[in-house]
Figure 1: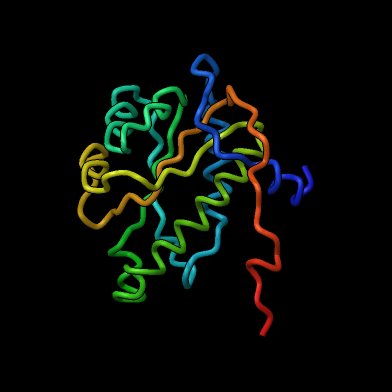
Figure 2: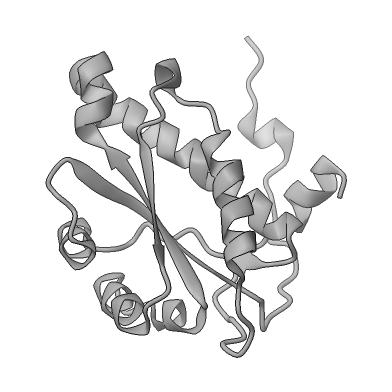
Length: 172
């Protein structure tokens, strides 16, 4: 698919066909796209947790403001930042800013790879980080940043409106 077509095709989907699986091969392709995202000083502080266990997905969904559609997706990827790793190179700026930028770049690559494979996802940032970390058994240095349920869509939403370039661009 042509890049600009792909960018415009991607949607945030919250309705998944729970009967259709996402293969390990598809997940690996998605994760391969994630690790090719840019990162601060090429530190690659991101860490990815692939969740298929229904009980773990249910627990995460409850800690994500009861976004129970996560349960219908056959897989969820929890994107995390290794705060110690980024902190060694960049100190507090790395932990407070670069870790979020780096994981956001990886998330965007994941979302585009998902769309390219004919799958769907939704970027979830509303969740209790501490409880999500506990569910995944993470230590204090691995910070959950985003939850991405992935599956086949049961919806076909239209493109949401976008602001014009004149509204968001200032040339200086």
